[in-house]
Length: 197
View (spheres, rainbow, N blue to C red):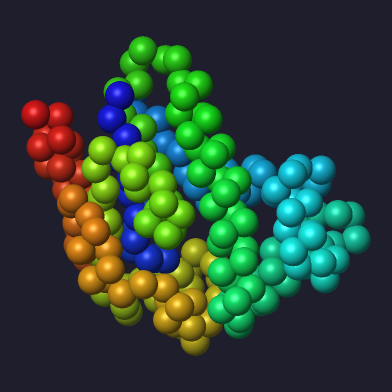
């Protein structure tokens, strides 16, 4: 079973690519963002760790995480963002590796780890290959605004705290330039042909 990491900045097309790959019978996708959401329910160890680190102010009255309050906090403060990332990495990396270990479907030949912070979390060292997606800034902003229902200024400020394209290009085995008319399915099939040789 091969493990392939998929990464890139917000708006680069990771989710779209993962959806395409998820349609294959021989592929299992581990979506780091989804896994974090699953771990963010009241009573979990992960959520308790967030409460201990950031306090009640990032929680709603019903003990659910106040995602907007937490996002506002981390997007405006490098130290808070680093704390949250380190905390999240500890839990999510372990969870992903446990889930991979427990795959017992013989049809699954490839596991995809879709993670925006693949390199920062250190999980790339468990991957056989890494594919990064790169896109023009205007296109990324357009996608983020549409996806998250936010204005261009907010989308741009989110992108500004993320790594430059060069960061991903240097660290990846394959790079997909996801331009406006890019056929992601064809691009990833070309990569898989090389990987499966």
